Image (cartoon, rainbow, N blue to C red):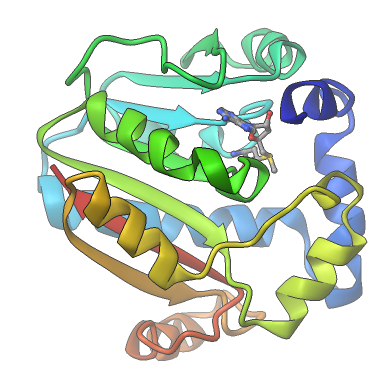
Length: 228
Ligand SMILES: C[S@@+](CC[C@H](N)C(=O)[O-])C[C@H]1O[C@@H](n2cnc3c(N)ncnc32)[C@H](O)[C@@H]1O
């Protein structure tokens, strides 16, 4: 069960991730920054200068939040791992954290503009993927965005990293097409995917090259967004 599983990693989450990707010669920070760059682009394309209210579902210890906090007006994180939430609360005062039972996100309908879930769905049992997506949609306001970032099962290096990661032993990777289908079934509109993390560099020239090939389904991760 995910809850017990991630309670074991409240202090060591970053180190375990780093260990699983060490074969690539890259730091965890590189991957967090790449996700944050793409999310920032999506937020500014959709909301313009307005800062949305954001929720991160399955936020763990909040490792991603320093990279994106400045793009949101209000920012909240929920997770089924109570120990991870305690750790996140102890480290970050500018995000509101709450534990969650894995079934109902503890917020009323239409509370947020931008609801994300990052490398979480592969830990959710496939039988619960539909209800998980419907919950994300429920707490998103009309005009808002639901955003899923996931490992791309078509990338061989991603598969190596997942196989090396001790807390991914229960992982069931979702293809981007499946994520788009789940969004459409949950009533989200215009579900579309960008693949990213093709190249191991952050130089401007590498980023410009990546921007041109985001449609190619071979990046290490992907971001699928749908609109309410
Ligand atoms: C690999 S960690 C990712 C943490 C964070 N999103 C990140 O990218 O650093 C997966 C997280 O999903 C959480 N999780 C698993 N199932 C969940 C569910 N049904 N609802 C909310 N969180 C869940 C786990 O407790 C864990 O903290």
